[in-house]
Length: 264
Image (cartoon, rainbow, N blue to C red; front, side, top):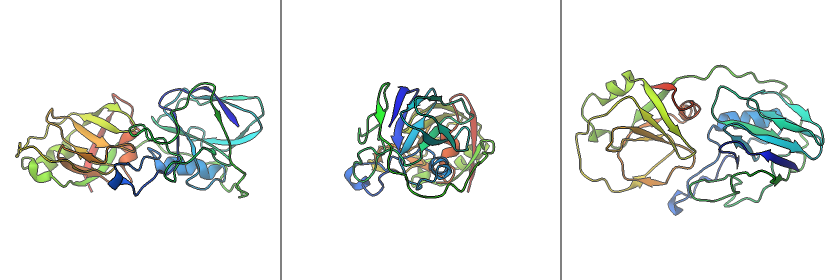
């Protein structure tokens, strides 16, 4: 096992999530940045979907036996000896991943070990003193010894949303030209300011299905992009949808930083 000495911030167990249950009101959940989490798993020879730790920093863990570890900060595998502690250093990105060879052997819910912070499914957010069991060695070769990460991009692509006709003409150009400030981030979504899109229609909208990357425009004028633990339905019009490969670009920006959106 590994022991959580200090959980840090927004620290949970995640994997690739539980897609296919939106009709039951259950969001896919899973890693906020699946590409980055998958890379960290590969660094220790795990399958892409092995359960790992997701955190916004401040995490300290202790190994109860020698374990091969990789993180999204060092981006290279290393061994933590039995009894030693490991403190995750700060990194440029907001969300980080810590993978242990063998993965975390936590009890799955609906086929996934992911913590859904909105629905309360999966393991509880990690707490100090918690023990995390490690799964069996996958028996694979470790073929990557380092995977250096480039700088975090600040431009994400978007396509027109299902309710784009609810906004005044020219909204696409206004959104493309805007410098958007990240005001708040959670596993549920990202709140953005810096542009107000004028409504062409002001009627009440019945709740409709939502997907990760959907950009809602509440009456206050701010924009909200859905993330991993998003509700499966919502009543604010969706003006745009961020490209699936670019959702993490916005999610990885810390509050107070800026991003831009460009038509795909």
